[in-house]
Length: 165
Image 1 (cartoon, rainbow, N blue to C red):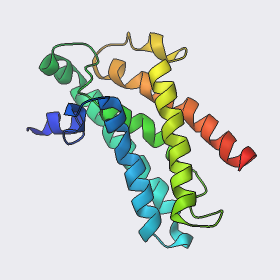
Image 2 (image 1 turned 135 degrees about the vertical axis):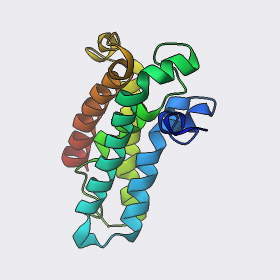
Image 3 (image 1 turned 180 degrees about the vertical axis):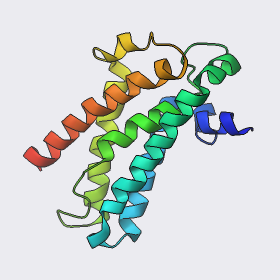
Image 4 (image 1 turned 30 degrees about the vertical axis):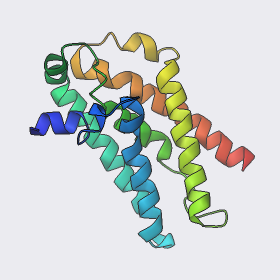
């Protein structure tokens, strides 16, 4: 597997079935949970930095290689290209109170689960303007709707975490 294909499919996750977008959303969730296990609580800001870097990598990969992905897989916004899901999923995982609550893996998994579920809902439903923005060309058309879904999911995740929990 060449470099661009590796980036676009997030190491081959986009080739998995069913629901390649769900598979492509998992890397930032797994990274966040893994980091909360090993990062000192006083350094939890590093979790946000690493998640942001993963999201940025997915976004840049989509922008840079999106046209190639559409050519390679023979359609606009091909399901095999999941770097956009990785980029979008990173957004609601940012600025969460990792390690608060009881500080356990259960608390952190609950935070990640809320962010994951809310992103998947918005990514699938594509509320305005996400659905229409897919008309953009190449990489931006692949990526932009997922970034919007990520922002919507971040708002919901932050509201649930801060107001309900």
